[in-house]
Image (cartoon, rainbow, N blue to C red; front, top):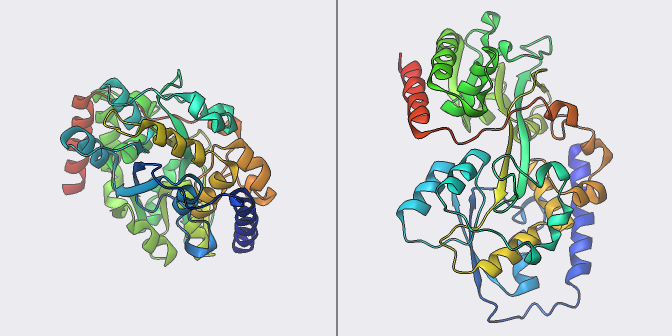
Length: 358
């Protein structure tokens, strides 16, 4: 069913963009460039019948997009901090945005050049990391949840405790990054993970030590192979990726902790290294067009914060999918990561590495 919906959605979006571009010369020159630094495979690129968003932007504006990718927020930060490379648009995550703002590494946006900002859902206009909405335009969002194999886990769970189930020993996967893994353990310890202390890390580390003998392995991208091929029973991961896994393996289902989880988002920002700020704002404004935001959603499976895209392009079946678009009531129970002090983050990293190696 989802594949059929995707085909219909792609056709509608393509028709809309064709109409918008009619009359555009496509031959504009000397419009300059924009340097975009984004996560890998994090923009609709023309595969599987979806739009090539960058081609559409270049055709409409004549602005050349120089597009490069990174794998982690930390890689992005190090590149901005320690190199002379100039980027105009970056798309970091919530906690990294906090860090970049704290270190004066972002430029304030001129929202007169970004009128499509009005298309965003109200919840995502003033982000926790940028409450005055000076530096950010939300790109995608989602929650962490669990993906499980119905042939191995017979009862749908509503708690992270399922990742400590001794009956599933040797079939449980866990995040291979300290921030996500520690956050799950902190929730089970009654701690809000959004801004933790060293004492909180100690408690979470003790909980993760209890889990270690039950695990098959710690994973990030390996989770796709493990779950899509029914090689593990259950894993925590990000909602959009869980939806992708479920498309591949019909034996998979999702479960959401009843007390909420991590609400995460990535946002478009302009770093202080930018040399093409006006073109950067044109790119951001373009990405907020409802048909473009819908194309990105169709490619990524991560929830769009674009209200017009949601209203005008998404099928009711997609809108009613609580994994992709949880209710406001559920989101109100979720937490958002902030930029913890460097000493706390280092302490977290050290403990997580020690747990894995013991």
